[in-house]
Structure formats: structure tokens, C-alpha cells
Image 1: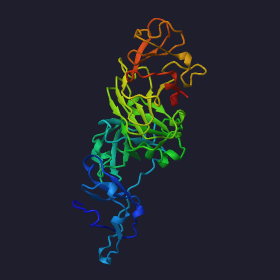
Image 2 (image 1 turned 45 degrees about the vertical axis):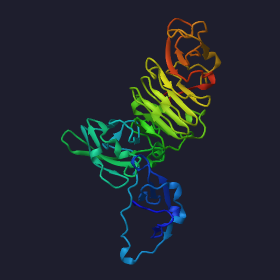
Image 3 (image 1 turned 120 degrees about the vertical axis):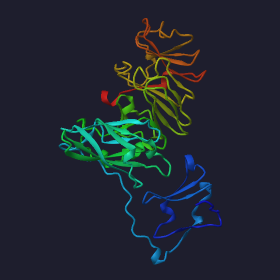
Image 4 (image 1 turned 90 degrees about the vertical axis):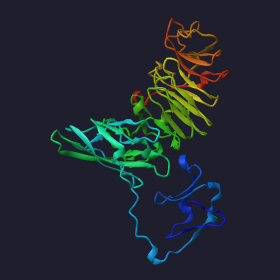
Length: 411
């Protein structure tokens, strides 16, 4: 609607639809100046009010109306729902290491997941349908055994995007005969994926681990409501299949509002106003937490590249998590807040041996003169130094800001 006048115009609700059934939000991107009105029962966008502020729209702008019989629309086709992925049997195709996928409009074009199937020589996409009902087959492709994203805007958060896409994939033998078919769901949000019935059925996944797993592609997932108590495994395809269970990080309380996943290259990741989880990946990333409490995950020694990540706004409420096995912190007592015997600080440290003059047990050393955190693999012995992260000038880092956790695969 181009010219809605608040206080003069009214929006009619018919066929039993009530104000309580609506979700009224301010748009994003191209619709940032518009109000989006959605039917929460059907998951459909009903109306877009251009150049209107959502704070100005309330129940007084709606009236109940009764349509003449000839204007009543026929029963609409039900809105597509994500179909749970059944446990593949026989020759049906399956995802390697996961039941469902997560990607969005910030995900780079390229591989999403690897497919497998007994006796399969090739795989094809039979159909792909978004929750808005449109055919989106052209936005995905399969090359070899790799399912690939061709157009990331198909999972955009705007009104034309999809909150999920159902993909039906067939496996074929060398003679191009169909061996089996399976429907997979690609979600836009992690918290939606962990509520998928395929995740809740406690069935084994294709790699035989028996652990419900969501495969998360690189991207910024900034509209999450992910419980830190979740026991679903998150597998990060852009981070060498690194796996993480939120519940394995008890130092995080409440919900995780954003999950920012980098790549093997340099990334610039910026969080929102709430609690965000950062997995920057390889190379020297620029990470900005934003508001709230923020958590920065280092999965291995190569995270941060040769120069270390730059965390622009690290605060005393933020935490750095390091994976125990990758950082050789596997002794009794290493799990949890970093022990004081593993931490030291100083000024004008030698980058090649920042723990020089301390003890053999020291692994993390903070240089107060340049706010640079080092990892030292062999304590005060020669060599072993590697920069991890630079923090804001003058920040007083302590061992309490560093937490040791186990990767799910190493538990």
C-alpha cells in the first residue's frame, strides 16, 4: 500500500483473522522504511505499508469486516512446511554428517554439503520449493556429490525471501536409473533448524554417530533465539567440519542471539546489540562484538592467521573460548576458566617467545603494551609463540576472560 494514512485509513480483517494473529514489524534492506504485516497462522505476508513506522501501527488501525459471499476466496493452498528428513534407508541419498542445513543471504556462493548414497554415481535435484511456495530449483545445483548454493538471496530475510527451502534429491546409478529420493530442508535460521522433527527423532545420521546434527554454512545469523542449553550438534562446514554443542559451553548463560561464522579467508564480522557467538575461522579477521556479552571461539592454532584476529570492542563481559585439544590443554583441571598457572602478562614481549621468563606451564601471554594476546606452545622454552588476537588499547585482560572447552568430536 503506497499511501496509508494513519488515523484515516483502516485495514479490514475477515474470515476469522484477528489482530492477535498478526505480526507487525519494520522491514529491512529495501523495505527498511516500510511496515510488514504477516499472518502468523499461515506464515504469509499480508500487506506492506510503504513509508510507515511500525511504532505507529496498533490495534486501532484494524477493523473486522464481513465479506460478501461472492468475494470470499477459495480455501488457499496450504503454506509449505519443512518436511522432516527421514533416516535414509537403502539407496536413498543422505547428507554426510548432518540431517538438515542452514544457510542465508550472507552465505558465499559455493558448496553447502556433501551427498552420499549406496551405489550412487550421481545426484539430481528433482525439485526445490521455498516456504513462500515458489520454485527455487535454479538457486541450487549439484556438481559431483556436492550440493551447492547458486543464489544466496533465495534465503534473504526480506519479504521475498524464504525461511526454509525443501529440496528433493534423487540418487542415480551409472545407467541414470533412480536409486532413491530424499527430501532435505535448508533453513535460514539455526534455531529453526534445531526444532526440525528430523532433529528431534533421535535417529542416527548418515555417518553413524547417532548425534543429531545441523550443518551450518558460513554466514551471519543475526536473528537467532538459540538456547545455550541446546544439545544439538552444530557442524560448521566452512571451518573444516568443526563441531560444537552449545551446552558444552556452560559459561554462556541464556540465549545466543547471533552466530557469526567466517571462512578460511579474512572476514569482517559485526555482531548486534545482544549476545553473539563468533567463529572467525582461518586468517586474520576483524571482529566487532557490538552490545551484549560476546563469545569468540578459536577452534585451532590457525585461527587468526599469522597476525591474529582483531577484536575491536572486547569488554570485561566478553569471553575467548579455546578448544582444548587444539591448544594442548588436556590435563586435569584445564577445562573451564583458564587456570592462573596457564596465563601470564608483560610488556614489550618477544613475539617468538612471549612466555620467556615465566614457566613451562604458561600457554597464554598478554602484552599490555600493545594489547596483543599470544599463545605459546612450550612456555618459557625457546620459540612457540603465535599471536592470537589484538584487543582494544589499554584493555586489562586476565585469565578469567579465557575459557577452555572441548570440541564435540573430542568429548
